[in-house]
Amino acid sequence: DIMMTQSPDSLAVSLGGRAAINCKSGQSVFFDSNNKSYLAWYQQKPREPPKLIMYWASTRESGVPERFSGSGSATDFTLTISSLQAEDVAIYYCQQYYSHPITFGQGTRLEIK
Amino acid sequence: DVRLVEAGGALVPPGRSLRLSCSASGFSLGDYNMHWFRQAPGKGLEWVGLIRSDGYGGTTEYAASLRGRFTISREDSNRIAYLHLNNLKAEDTAVYYCARDSFFYCGKDDCPRAGLDCWGQGTLVTVSS
Image (tube, rainbow over all chains, first blue to last red; front, side, top):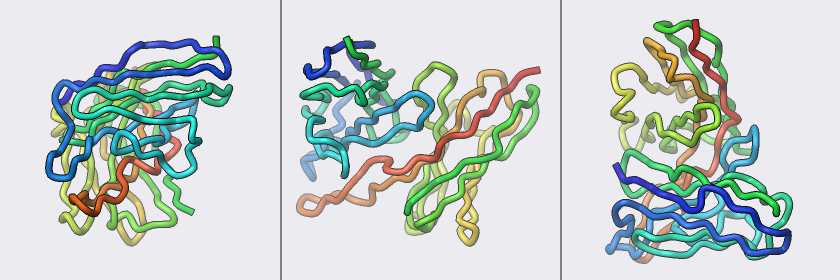
């Protein structure tokens, strides 16, 4: 199984500030044949299911605000929120779909400072 | 509108069985790989298993720790997927979600979307005596 490790576990950022969440995979999730990292990000608000916000590590899902961006390749990835809004308070999970079983990071709780 | 709705969660004693359902609207279950996940109270997301699309034979795959107790099936005509939970244990207590996998393929020059793009609202299974 590919282990996914996120850092930090929790993060408090001021409104309008920048938030960065890191994700590290235990092995590369990059396919040479198509130059893609099989890495997605999800946002989960209390009492709601997860919501896809990013796939291929840096492709924003339709409808997701531009302040969300993804970067990284192979084993190291970052989700950045450029200007934090109140509605961004949530737990964020990275997930690899390079191989089964699908695995998630432990989650990063993002709060307002 | 694409939507998934789970049902069937309940409070059951250890050793009992339960069948969860995942009803789809706006798309055909047979066209997509469909996954089940669970989330224990206050914990992260755990993959339970999947049933592949018709194009991939409708085969199933399970988390190693759950294989033999949990099975997934599908009724395409009724647009329902099922998760059968057998010999339930206290550690199976969780919210169970079904989710649609939007990934089909990714070639060098043609790489459409990916990710679990539609989730149900979840159904709570509590295993306790």
